[in-house]
Length: 73
Image (cartoon, rainbow, N blue to C red; front, side, top):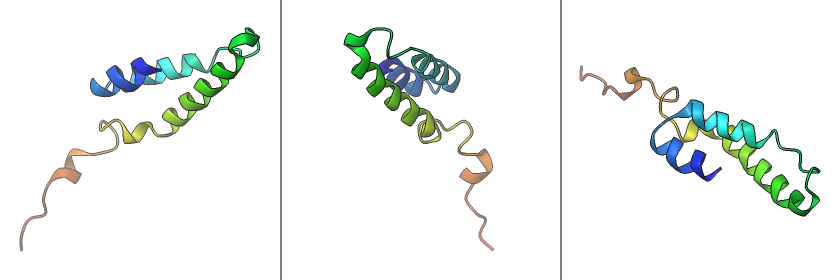
């Protein structure tokens, strides 16, 4: 999760960001009862980060046309 938040966002690597967070969601919290709570908390965080991914990446969120300043008339 930290790798996705720090390195992937800094490098603007959305595909790796999604891959890492989606992988975290595949773990079964009941497999290891001693880590169940931690797994559930981290999976909630992964879902929240996936839901907000457009806030971290500029590839799809901002088009080059939206960066142009309007011409004066």
